[in-house]
Length: 328
Image (cartoon, rainbow, N blue to C red; front, side, top):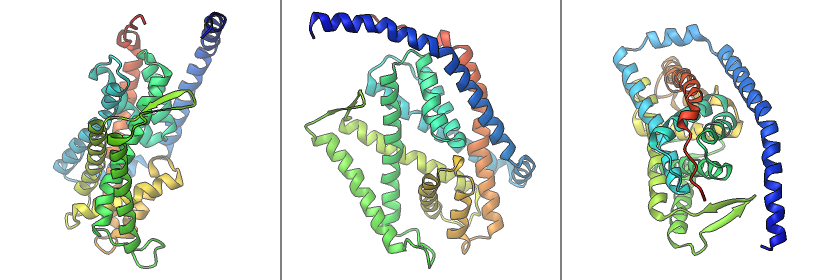
């Protein structure tokens, strides 16, 4: 870089900082207003009396088991960002990262990925002094961990033939098995790329993306698959006992794709429709819907109520949690 270019860059930095400072306050206010509106709209869509009545019909022991597995699942998902910390090589403690992961996951599940997965992460990590580029890397690695983990566990379940599609569906049982084989091949390809690829870096829209090591990639696939398995375990706990866990896991994995395609926050109605369609010959519709309603209450609503409080606490302590930037 020439001296003139360096001087031009140095002169533009204060101007960019000034522009950001000017917009920071109104954008922050807009974020909070949007969050309040979304939470209010979400709350009005919930039939709270029905939720409470459904939960009252379950044994306390069953609800405690489901809640415990839910907590474990949220911690596993939040640990995706611990991998991200290693990936970006930034000095953040687990006490700073786990709350961000838990809060983002709860908002992601209930209010869409744009609110929880993206906006909430940017808000909380920027409060911790993480640069926008590194936040994008953490977000990207978390998404990769979730979906490559999904491909791994779905590939195993689908290719094994444990889930049989109902007659008349566009996707047959044989086709589902081939989908499982394809997902396993994609997962294996990702691992092979992490191990053997000579090119390790790409730049997309100014963000540098580095291919992780094989060890990190294996950890991604294991943690991602574990989280999907724990989600299924929560549902399995709340559905009729005569259903087998592998079958419940397979149906959840199918419903996840349906939820992504429809772009409905929290997959409202999609999850229930897929479970009833695939399991109505195994259990009564009433017991399936009751179990899934309890699942939504324990895995979606309860964590959201808790994380709203967590978010307010994190915001209140933002200055104390902010890391000290080291001089470059």
